[in-house]
Length: 80
Image (cartoon, rainbow, N blue to C red):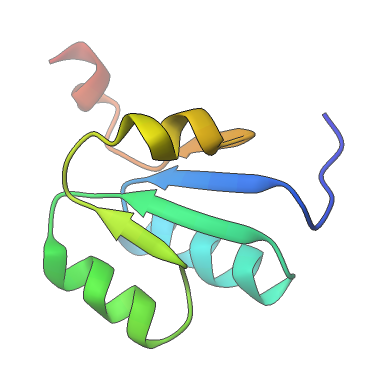
């Protein structure tokens, strides 16, 4: 897959790793949204321009819109 500036990226998990991805990808000009557990993390990221939007719930529209999904969560999440 080739990324271009029209690529919509969804990051699942906005902790240290997910936040780092969000900041770097947004700085590079990509459209970045997120799904994460804490609303305060979403608010922080939006205020600093790291993401366009985010949610703490599964959002089928964000998932459908995404061309690339980055999972930045602990591996045990997939097992649980």
